[in-house]
Amino acid sequence: MDTVLSHYAVSVTELKRNYAGILKQADSAAVAVLNHNRPEAYLLPAAHYEALVTRLEDLEDAQLVAERAQGPFTEISLDAL
Image (cartoon, rainbow, N blue to C red; front, side, top):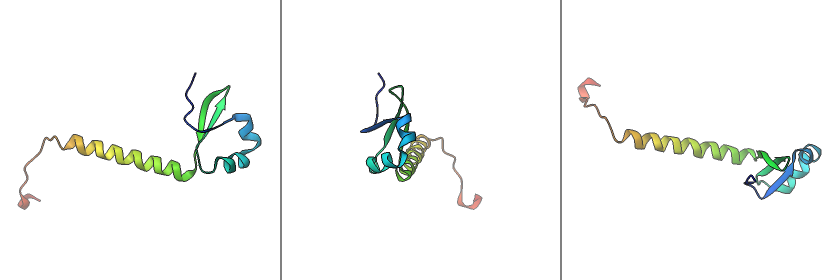
């Protein structure tokens, strides 16, 4: 069985019938959208999605910094700049 990563879950059919009501009931939380009782998608508030994307970008930047901190380094004089 698949893991549902949300406290709220609705079927695709239920979502089609009552989109506004489901969003209101979820109260800014993620909603798992199920198709044949398996997670098909997650419905996130825009602010949550934007925060996730920002966090992912920050993690990718931190990984790049860690990789580049190991070198190789090139010596350049200030006059060459």
